[in-house]
Length: 421
Ligand code: PLP
Image (cartoon, rainbow, N blue to C red; front, side, top):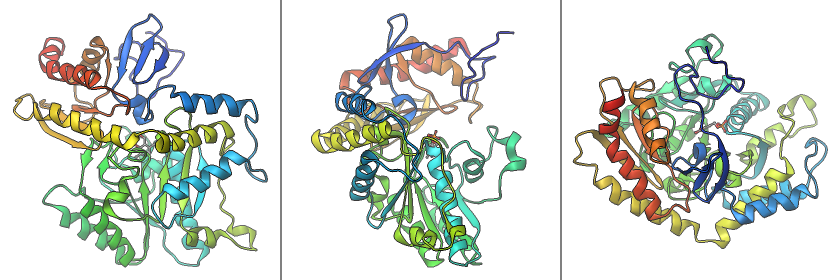
């Protein structure tokens, strides 16, 4: 039995090839220890937006580490965190006025759930239930797994997960079922909050739904006085074509979670933004109404400086144009798959595309999965299909030539893996 000292995430060490040792990254490309180049077709788990080692972000990191590396964030504050909060509020959907920092997407969502529960408790209302979309993914902590889809990846932890009302995904033509289920969940007055990934469920299989449904779900929550939490951990920072996906539905959530691309993907930082009523419910002479949450590295100054440089990049570089161009190029590639009998459901939103490889055993544990990954790597491309769903989520500096390589490798995958599965 091979023993791995490093235990990798979501990795079956007994089945998967040894991890690729990456030594360097620049733009949309990674370089291995033995000097092979690999195109980062999934933005290193959806975090890298402008490209690896973006010069302005890297410079801001160097500059900040020379001034202040880390400081406790309770009782102390610092310029990068203060300025970043103001700038985040400027670019976020209207109405969000307070920023709570943490370190990852999961913690941003945990904070959101705790804020929602704390809000209702502090204003003396017995609303404690959470609703979430079927197939959703919000992280891998106990709270976020509770809100997410249940499956093979959390079956062992099921006894610890709290009960959440799972609302059916708004499949095209069945949107009313979703709205009716959310409406039913709100009717007894116990619904504290509804959480969703706006416009596309990422880890659940790159499932896209319309802005109209998103807007309607927000209206249902308003009708039942339930908070609306937008988990934009993956969708934020341009992935769906706009800075935030909520904008496309013209909605402002009560609570917004951001992470991943907040620092351009360079360093771990997350933020949970809230409206004044949520902050005000915790603002009290009574210390028991404090928002009781922290982590050691909350608002790390170097991470905040990286995030400020990311926000500046959105202003100084033509990022929306790059995003639009990626969409157009990928549309052309996707069109060529429409008649390919090996694939189904080619789809795109913003910079994200996906298509499903036709297999007899679909789902997260689809047997083709590891062979697909190996095939892509052998073509110098990092893709990590979700089961048999192949998706592309490239950094915004990717070129037409880079993307041509990706889609060529996807096109040749069925024949290649037939030989290996
Ligand atoms: N929420 C969404 C929508 C995500 O896609 C993810 C991660 O992919 C998370 C939360 C968890 O983020 P993290 O992996 O940074 O904890």
